[in-house]
Length: 287
Image 1 (spheres, rainbow, N blue to C red):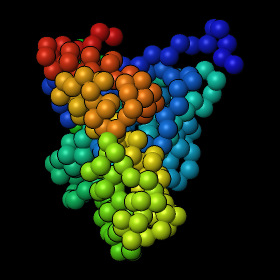
Image 2: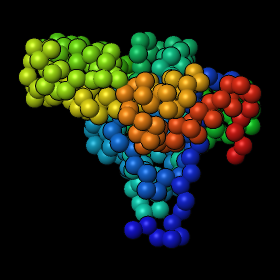
Image 3: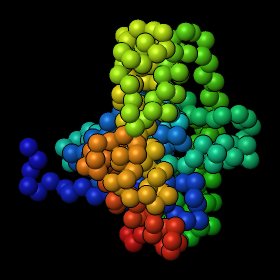
Image 4: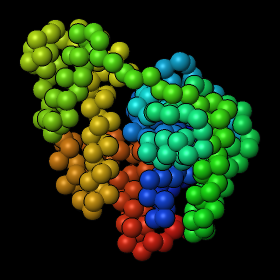
């Protein structure tokens, strides 16, 4: 049971109009937990108070102040409070294009870059993450862009590597990729696992194991994450949350609200309001 004087949760997920390929999140979470999900781009987060437990394929990272968490694209992970008072953090979500452009400009790495470590005690990079947030909130595009690039270049220099290409050598991996394509195409009315396996000429449990091995989560978990991703793109384009919910296969808007909030960290209405404010007025959120 949470004490009456427990810290209140708050979150702001937004985008600075001058840096359209970068999403920003500042938040305090206490009871909120992020289910297993992944991102199309990169994640750089730092904690200013408390502890965040980040569940990654290699184990759980207990991230505290001064730690920088680095998550590569499409890496499944979870997050929750590591202490009763929760955690306060700032996170940057740059696109894959942004990171690879910085790598090509400032490092000798060529190809799709990533990070060999999932976390590092790096107070300087941690401060720079918060500086990017501060500059964006103040409307200082030159500072936000400059600090982001210097921070990423430093992390690449200390922790960067080339990501291996995921090849579909085995029959199971090919079946998993085909299953993913089917789920993307029929997101609003997906087949059962048994029907999907039959369509692909395999067995349900074999497909389940192959999909989990290939994508780090079972098909139904992956589908929920994919639905939220597509809903985000629709909200960015101005689609009403209720319409987006049914278009991606959720039963109604409350169903979207629940999963969207758990995965993104803010409700879809709040997410869309910040987006509209950024795109239409160029304004930045007040602190």
